[in-house]
Length: 208
Image: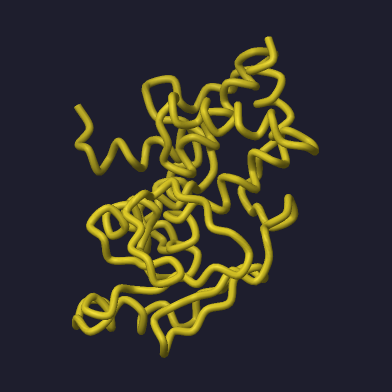
């Protein structure tokens, strides 16, 4: 039976795309998606035609795994996106991008979204100078996200921030690495989502 670490990488192989669940490993030549670009299992190399419900399910699973959410959490986000004005699928993606764990990862202040959730859960981040320990917290335009002062002074944090100096940051986020913080310049749009996903299929799945 695969170890827990191997199971994480199997998720990317199932979706046949990088979900960036393992931090630096995803950017190296050791990434299983690059080494074995086919689904895991005995019949992984077989070409299967996926249609209808199966396609919709795969897109939903891809999004869930990318943002590290349970089915219940994901469904709640979808229902909230559905109630908002605008296109449901685009609303959903924008809301997922605004999750605090995703923002911390995009800023380069965590090795992965899983790591970001751990740091947030332990109270290492402040939003507008208030401690927030809920990874699903949605940031807003103008919010300032930063390390708690005590955390910023640790050698581990300084090393982490130093190692991500060259990491590309989305245009809707402004990062001040010297100040161990970042600011939300604007709300993310559909164009800011880099994961190859067809969100309308997720909407169709939940609309049945």
